[in-house]
Length: 394
Ligand code: COA
Image (cartoon, rainbow, N blue to C red; front, side, top):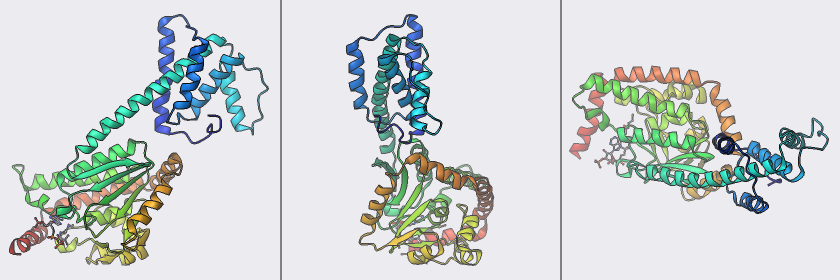
């Protein structure tokens, strides 16, 4: 325990724990009105239970444990306050000293209560994980798994080249919300089959319900805005593992990822003007910023399809790997990254994103407003009809 004392705390976990841990024993003691004294045997058992904890409870809880242990075994703090620069021992001394004249018996009981609470919250945590697993497995268009500190969102409509249907938009948002809160360090998005993703499912435009075309267009604009906001606000590193060609919104949103690894078989294509549409995913801002306006225009205005090597050269892709070793090399790297301190990674990402978050939301709003207009335009309707007509003639 002592050796792991100053590892970085799991912040979300810590907050959860502190709420549970600090309140529960206090409530218990308060309700009884009498401080029960744990027996020596209970105290010894608690010490053993502490060794079985799987999750790091975080520094603050560990300080509480330390202080209660010292108070229970040695009584009130009687050592000299360590120097200001001796951070670790000073924090420990302060935690112990803060217990004042709390009797040994009371400290022993509180220590036992605290350890029991910590152990018991690990059980709900496991069942919570199962519950989350249920939700995850209920997805129809994606698969979500969490392993080795990595949550992977697998786009899973290979027969449609992973085109994003309305349901899939909703499910990806839900998966991102869950990944933002789970214990993983990294979130990875990748595709099943030969494509990474062929962008917006064009049949989203043709399935017009009783709401009428104008309302449908507005609803689609709202949905897209919400979808892109999930990427803008995503709080931890989001990595694209681009296993094959990417089209449309699957390309534009990459400017909001924190790293993008690609097979050399992938291509990157955003054929907006061909479809009478306009850029989304904040690409009207991120692409010129990443690669310069002159290069971004070729992609966003003139439908230039990039090879993976070109996308890498322009800064849209972090690194390209030969297809034969792609999965092996990328996952090896991701597993190493996932061992880095997760809070440090998340806070660093948030600092980098924070600088322009407001700007990105404003760009997202503008892009979606323009698209609502575009989707109702003749240029767009003709292009979409053309796609499905061509299909029906094959
Ligand atoms: N929307 C709706 N359906 C799509 C789709 C999309 N974005 N991308 C692929 N599909 C469907 C095809 O209609 C086809 O369905 P079917 O089997 O029921 O006919 C199936 O996925 C397989 O695609 P297919 O076109 O047969 O494969 P391909 O290898 O010849 O071409 C693409 C793949 C992605 C190049 C081609 O499907 C395409 O151009 N899709 C549209 C991409 C697009 O414009 N996205 C929006 C950008 S804003």
